[in-house]
Length: 287
Ligand SMILES: NC(=O)c1ccc[n+]([C@@H]2O[C@H](COP(=O)([O-])OP(=O)(O)OC[C@H]3O[C@@H](n4cnc5c(N)ncnc54)[C@H](OP(=O)(O)O)[C@@H]3O)[C@@H](O)[C@H]2O)c1
Image 1: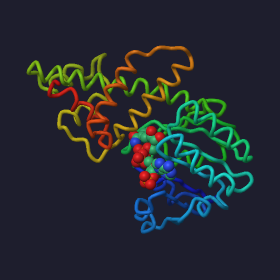
Image 2 (image 1 turned 180 degrees about the vertical axis):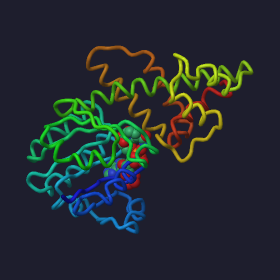
Image 3 (image 1 turned 180 degrees about the horizontal axis):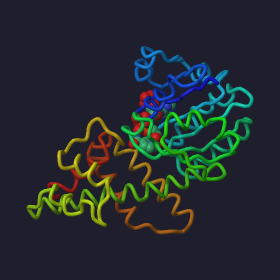
Image 4 (image 1 turned 60 degrees about the vertical axis):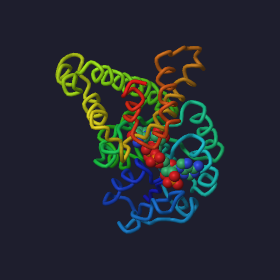
């Protein structure tokens, strides 16, 4: 089958690369800013100038864009051009409202939707080791099995389309809280004259350990935020999506709300394009 990938950003480009050399007829890519897709042309991918050129004739269209508004805008062009029976694999993190609007748009266009956000960041994407939170019809997930095997180390089947997005929001509530908590912990360590490595050593391999603390803690300790694995503005977007979802359930999440406020401050300070570990810069030196 021909596979089209819409969006070749931090995640989309390595996900497309994982598809090459597999048993697909052709892998086509499209990106709004052509310069980001250009390196893929040199690697043998078919790079198209427009969305319709990428999706026409494709059996599956994988989309990986910033947010729900971007996905919905691109789908306006993609859905009418998709073949009958083609499957839309939506992997971006879009939140509840957009996920419902995407499902409706796909339904109205007669396109089968797999809502499949992913866990993992740039490095797992480059290694084909994402975790895919697939939700949608089993038969469609079966047909896209080769795609999921290529991009991920594990694919969960979570139920009807939209469930993947709900699971992703739950995981990202944990992720953004953990990151901000880590930033504050390391800032406290610094203010007490305790080296970051000492803290990481103390939690190491014990019940308080989290592998993520070593990855992001290392970036914070080195103040090394570029290129971003997961941009701070995307983490902020996800925090807001978590709060929106909680609000729909009349649920208050004061910790996530504080995280969002802090990440918004970091974004306003110009750190939005850097890795989300840069939120540490707001805590240290103490301001
Ligand atoms: N990075 C991670 O660790 C990670 C992990 C899991 C999930 N995610 C999620 O995956 C998605 C993509 O993340 P990323 O890190 O790959 O982001 P990214 O590097 O910023 O890439 C964003 C992509 O979206 C495109 N885009 C944005 N607005 C658009 C619009 N209006 N129309 C068309 N294209 C548009 C960009 O095109 P241009 O090149 O033209 O700007 C680019 O291709 C996000 O939803 C993110 O939350 C990210």
